[in-house]
Image (cartoon, rainbow, N blue to C red; front, side, top):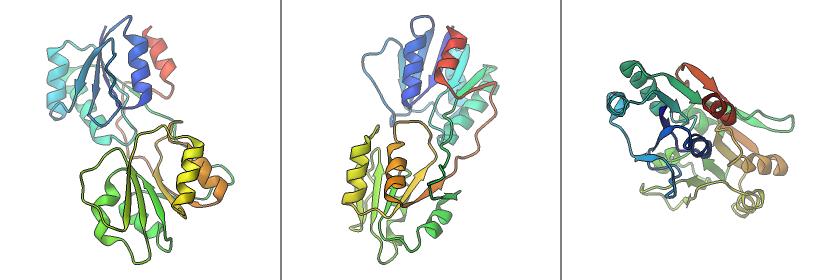
Length: 239
């Protein structure tokens, strides 16, 4: 079977490796995700040109199954996948990580967007953001008395002297997150409900040192033909 996997997270790479021996696999990543050179399948790096471009790729390459295994916050890519599957009459499966759930000793503030984040961090002095580039677009709006720590994959956006920018890719160890949050005197963690284990250590640290967690809710994602929350179960259906 000819399969296109829209990836960018570790589980997507694992799926590609599991299936490559028995299927003709095309693996796509936007350019910000994990890219490995020693692969036994075809790589596509970069966008397709929206849903119509993706539909054309599916038809031109005779793709028989489209698998959306992107990050749960890559809502635009998931929507393009839904439309492309409809345009090309290609089945669409999806892998989505289970959401993190608060434990009894967690202190989470659920938020839906940036304005709610701003309200939630009011009164804190040293927020630690792990929500991507969004905070960098608001560097001129940092309240007096706050200093921001922002971690993202990469950035060319100019920052402010009141922002410390860390460009890094997980997974992050518990000792690394503990040292980071203590060194920067973090008093509130701003993160998104990505799920998975690769970046979960920061939640353990927040719990241990007793700080609030501002948790960005996931965006609405499309309905697909088959939905999986376990990557091995998805692979088993095709092996």
